[in-house]
Each structure stands twice: as C-alpha cells, then as structure tokens.
Length: 492
Image (cartoon, rainbow, N blue to C red; front, side, top):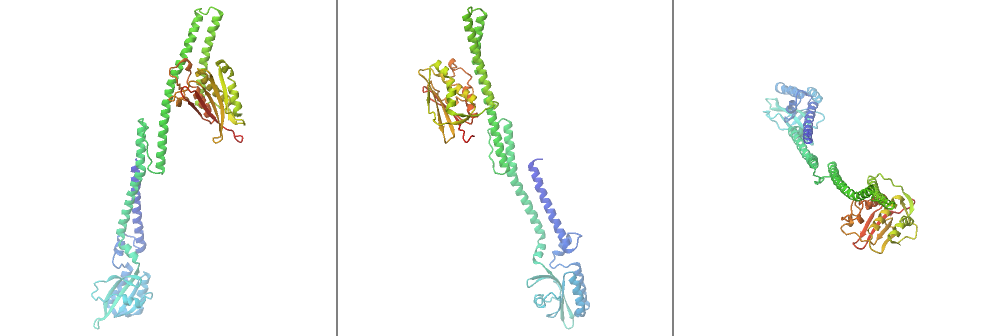
C-alpha cells in the first residue's frame, strides 16, 4: 500500500470518525435535554418548533385549556392554580393567568409588572397559540389560550404556560442541521488541505528520492536533489545527497585505483624488465663460459647482485607504500629536537655526497631548541627519498643541496626545507609530483627510473605526522621541497 493511499485512508477515517462522534454527541445531548431516547427525530420535532413544550407541559396545558372551555370559573380558584403551578415547576415551567388587563395568578419567580407589559394582546380566535417573548433580559417560550370567564359579560381571560429558554440555545437548536453540515464541510476541507500539504511536503520529495535512486541504480550519480524544507524530509534529502556524493567519490576513487593499478603494472613491468634482462644476460654469460676468469666472474656476479638489489628495493617500497595507504603501518612518536634530528639524518648520507661530489649548505637553522614529535625511522626514509631524488637528477656542476629549518609560531609548526640546483620540474608537472605512480619524465630514461612512489611515500609519512608537504620549482632553476611538522608544546 502506497504512502499516498495510506494518507488518504487515514484522513478519510478521521473525517468519518469525527462526524460520527459529533452526531453521537448531538444525539446524547438531545436525550439528556428531552429525556426521549427513542429517536433523533424527537429532538427536531420538539426543539425546532417556535415554542417547544414537553409531554408533561403539554398535558397540563391541555387540562387548563379544557377548564377554560368548560369551567372557566375554576381558573379563578387560587388553590387550584397553585396546584397546577407546582406540577409545572416540577418540569421547570410556570403558570400565568390573565384576567382582563391584570394578572390573576403569576408564578412566584416571575415579576408581575414585567410580565404584564410583555404578554401578547388577546386573540380570541387562538390562531397563534405558541410563540416566544422577551421579558427584560430574559427569554421565554410559551403556549397560551384566550377565553371568556363570562361569555355574556365578555370577561376576557388567558392561560400562559411558560418556560424560560436560552436565546443562544434556541439559535443553536434552530441551526443544528446547518452546524452539522458546516462541521462536516470544515472537517472535509481540513482533511483535503492537510492531505495536499502532506502530499506536497512528504510524498513529492519521497517520489523525487525514489526517482533519484532509480537513476543511481542505472549508474547516473550526477543528479543532485535540492531539499524543499528543513524538516526530517529535508534532512533525509541532504543525507541522500551526501550518500550520492560519497558514492560518486567512491566510484571515482575506485576508477582511479584501477587506473593506478594499470599504471603500476605498466611501471613495474617496465622497470623490472631492464634488470631482469640484465640478470638474464649475465647469467647466460656465466652459463656459456663467457666469464672465464675469476675477475670476469666476479664482475658478472656483482652486476647480478646489483640488479637484484634494485628489484628488491622497488618491491619493498611498493609494499611499504601499500601499508601506509591502508593505515597498517604504525607510527612510533618520540620527542625530538628538530635541528639536531635533521642534521643527523642528512649526515648519514655524507658518503653519497662525497661520491657524487655534492656540496651541502645549511641555512636558517634556529639557534634555540625546537621540539617536535616525530617517528625517527620514518623521517629517515623521508630525508633519504628526498635526497635520493636530488642526487638522481642533478647533472650540472657544481652540485649543491641546501638544507634548512624555519619556525612558524603562528602555525605552531617547524618547516623543513631540502633544495637542489638540479634541472627543476616543469610547471605542468609540479602539482602531481606527490601523486602515487606519477613520474614527470615520460621518456623513462635510466636516470629517471623508479616506481614513482618515492614522493608519494614521503607525503604519506608527513601527513601521518600531522604535517603538510609542498614543492616549488622552475625548469632549470632547481627544486625546493618544504614539509612541516607540528611543534611540541607543554609536553604534548
């Protein structure tokens, strides 16, 4: 069953139940007022007449009317009138007897002067026996009968059986059918308006979510829903958009991973082909007896070992990066002094600098102690990868590597800098140098060989420390690598 149909059934049920309860309440009210439980029709018959009388009142009125016709003189008997008045009081009514222009008998709680002026004129034909009248601020319904006490003397008299009514109650009684109809109309109109409102605020947004889900199922992740409100449906729409966006990012990331995997296979297969070919060639030379002397055999064995070491290093770097990328490589942080740590890590490569004829310059080293929280082994790999890149690409003399540290108090970080005077990096390649498997040199010359993971590993390690890394370079002007590490403050 759809939500739209459920809402329609719910609102219809509300209308039916409301109208039924209202009619039941009206019926019970009529029973309480009239004491007649036989049918609702009695309610209308009694209460929609001009001056309603109950059965008891009507019976007493008929008795008095009979006396007025057959024994009018008895209506001057005050004892008899009091007896009838007591009977009327029991049914909350009263009795008035008029003789000529004066009141012969008046119910005690009805002021004689007020009623004398309010009573209607004589109408001996008795064409209008029931009516209403206002006595001051009070409202009364009455039944009357005009007669002659003495027909020969034309002595006029009137009988009034009266009952006080509420004007508002009389209006309600007269307008009850219209009120019921108006109530039913209002309930129906309210249900319709509420149904349309809920449909517009709930069903239509849900329909939009359903259509968007269908498009997502078909592979279209570009359609963005706009929430029409800030309620639960609007929040659901925002969450749905966020899910769609993340799903789109996940698919794009998956595609990027697939592209990276293909690129990795291409890179690794290309980089492994050369050492494998070399190893195969030297091995065949040994097998075929080309290396006949101990010196030649030693040379071939050394070449095979070197190429195998290159392959081992390449595989190890790939494995290490995978562990960093999957957050499976733990960090062991210790308190360290930034300048002494950098100096220690750079000096470890002194033999390489001497062999390659590289001059190391130190600049911007702070004089005061700068404490950082670092994983020394991983930072050793960072420095090694950065220096290896510099040594690999520097070809012109003199070869210079510049190392320095600057403290940024505003950012709460120590900024490390390693620069070289190599050929630099083209502007179009600079934004991608820290991407995995990216290599700026597409010619894949031996000098540029590698898996393209060195700088990607560096970026993962620095970000694992809570820092950031960036590169600045211009073609022919060398390259500067900057990375930051948070300062250690208050022992934290």
